[in-house]
Length: 186
Ligand code: HEC
Ligand code: HEC
Image (cartoon, rainbow, N blue to C red; front, top):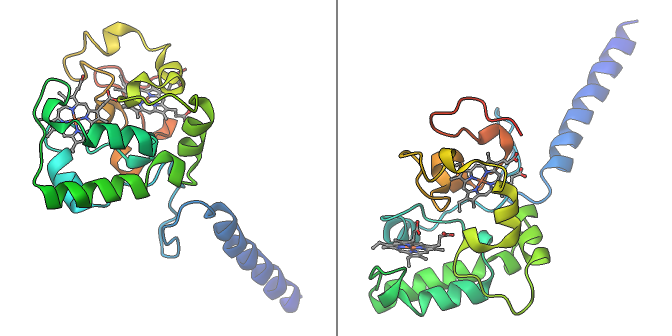
């Protein structure tokens, strides 16, 4: 009787460990510890120069949301960046470019990055994440009152207003709350 209990407990623990391995496939982050982390949609933002320089006017967008060719085009036009000047010192610009290129959607295994690459035409070079058809489609049911006419959001480009863990790469429905509209349901 005792042996059966011990055996059952052992099997259960082994299953738990196996489950953590199985779910942790494309995350790249350590998942052993007390907390069980959910796998994010894109890689989290983890370059300090990028966060400092490109996160001062808007969130430092996760690099896995655009292909390398888009980051290249953006980094080559920083003096006229959506009517702002976002020019950088040459060495900082090189570091940030490298980070963005190495972690771009076409260099990432995360599921939203792969999805973005699958839905973009090969000759499409969007300068905005919000211009990607797949991203637009995911948001097309949200009324304008909740975005444009909501002074806590204003623009779809303001991801962090609704996706609280966007910087950690999570766009999961469990991490969404639209300011002023509790409990958004599809
Ligand atoms: C001086 C302010 C400023 C800085 C610094 C800045 N940006 Fe921007 N960025 C803007 C503005 C303004 C927009 C347009 C936002 C809008 O339309 O709501 C924008 C938009 C973007 C978008 C498109 C967002 C969308 O709609 O999908 C990307 C990508 C982007 N910036 C990347 C960068 C990168 C990379 C850097 C650093 C090299 C950077 N930005 C630094 C002001 C800035
Ligand atoms: C006004 C709030 C709001 C803003 C701003 C916003 N989103 Fe969303 N997003 C949502 C909601 C709500 C959904 C879920 C839509 C549904 O369930 O129909 C969603 C869904 C998504 C999804 C699909 C997630 C899934 O599990 O299918 C992705 C990816 C995403 N958003 C990325 C972004 C990015 C990137 C930005 C910024 C460039 C952004 N969102 C800005 C509210 C927002």
